[in-house]
Image 1 (spheres, rainbow, N blue to C red):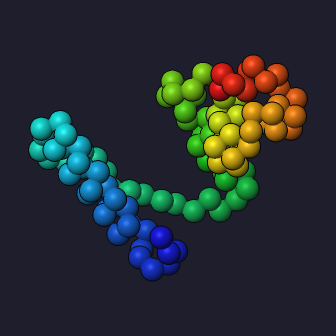
Image 2: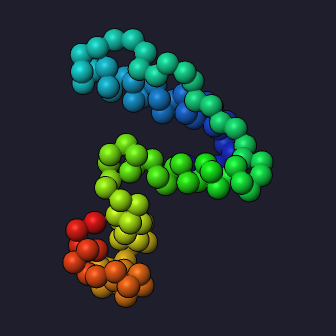
Length: 102
């Protein structure tokens, strides 16, 4: 994916359209899946940016996808940065058994 080649709204419309097509086919349904179109607004000051960032990082916990913020942090270290359990335990000081469960 190249940045700047396609406007963000057009890119999101294409992605959402493909997902809706797949979802409707899988669940034998028709019609719109998303009510509103994609919206974005700039985070113009640091305080608002930190609020948005906190919301993004805490969302999996609030949605019940993860039990704790620590699990999200450990999975990020494990998969996004490709660190081993031993490396994560050494960096964070968290017991290896806890890292394995995340």
